[in-house]
Length: 404
Image (cartoon, rainbow, N blue to C red):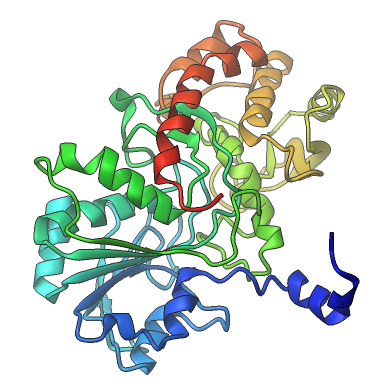
């Protein structure tokens, strides 16, 4: 029950999400004093901002706590690079802080960077989007392993998972480990970066570091966030964590529709709505009609035509669908994407194909999705195949959760 005495001012405050405060803002409120006397290296990108839209590196410098180094992940520290790219190493012209290119580097190489910069405390602040194949969580894992090697402390300035705390999808088979999925977690993990850091430290790091764990792990938790709170309810600004993640709605679809990167269809890169627009030349109205007839929860499909400016089918008219999420809480992105794959293959057998390199296996975490769909399995059968491993993951992660 909401008390009537709260009034319009309180309602407006709630709407603005003042109750959700990321970890970075909590330390900035105290002048970053926790880092006094420490040689801090920051792994971050444009999403590492305070509520006043100041980047945390700029805030640290202004507070007299200048980092000794910044480490840039995929797309770079300031976010100028496209998918699969980075900015290289340089001196940041604004802050004069050395920036090291950490995208895709090994644990040994990153540990060497820590030693060169004199880092004794590694700070991670990047907004994730909640999918196993989004590379920032694996950059964090490498950064954690390198901290074990050098004895550095590790601090996560936590942020909300924009797609909430529900876990969906298949577990990664370690035989299919890659840069888009290094360890056995499910496709939509439903954890914050801080929760994942705790999970990684306990479950995976010892096997990769000779039985060792981090000397010290601190998670500066988000104040006022709950697992069922999606990004649209936080009142926080959406800062695109990568060039093809322009909106919170993109993030909702991405844990499922990114699977189309493993097909010949366009996943919408080169449009204004990547991962929401899916299609290819000669796909027609029948796909949207078929999908809408299935009444999937929380989503409707619009017949759509688009011309990508880069990536697949540059300059060619593609037919397909645009996803419109109608109920964020009931929407299941992975069930939705599997349904899209199954129906596309059935409706357009002469058009639909997997990428020749079977990249979809890396995204899905095994060959099971591809081989089951090729064998004619229905959606319920495909999804049912991973329910046991999903249940085990949900149980395993419970001890590492921070938010409820």
